[in-house]
Image (cartoon, rainbow, N blue to C red; front, side):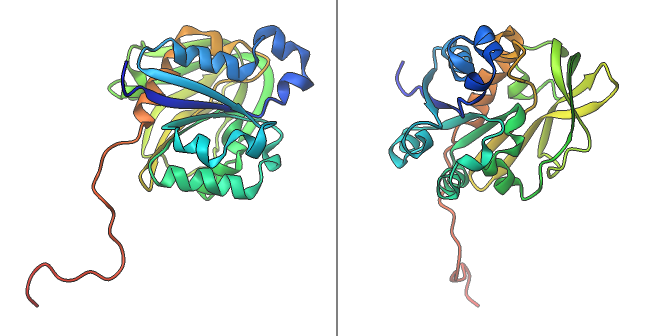
Length: 241
């Protein structure tokens, strides 16, 4: 199929070495599971990069052939040099899509784009999570029912220190009683950003069909869109003054 959406799955690839149970769930790494979910769509072409590659796998050449990045990270946020963070941020502002998953709310590129701490409450007790679809007409919710049930997940709870989203697609409820804005859409510059909460590394969340559908929908939503040039600075009047 010509003109496929070019999606790059990026993962630190650190939890896979720290916790043997991660590879028991995701034998090809978390990035492998994310890539497989996206490859289920005929209109998406998928590549993978990890932090142990040159320039953390985020070279100028890689970004030049990327329409959307799917970003999963945990713990090693500061191991991505600021120059690379700035490179990715600049591409997002210029139109590249960014999908931020689970603990990547602390990724420096997301924090820089949000301009806040992006902090939250958390508890890892393996409790069930119910994601309610609060924007059923949104493209990211296409093909879903009114909720998604996850048997086990890490809890994230409000307050979530991010700017109010332009659109909210999902709200989570946890067995412990907390709620959380789990599907936040933003537009910064020319780029679209989607934060999606589920995806703790020791639970098989990314194997669940509904979650995989959300990933594909989000990639399509975050794709660059055509638009006219942005004009800044001094501007001559259109009418005679």
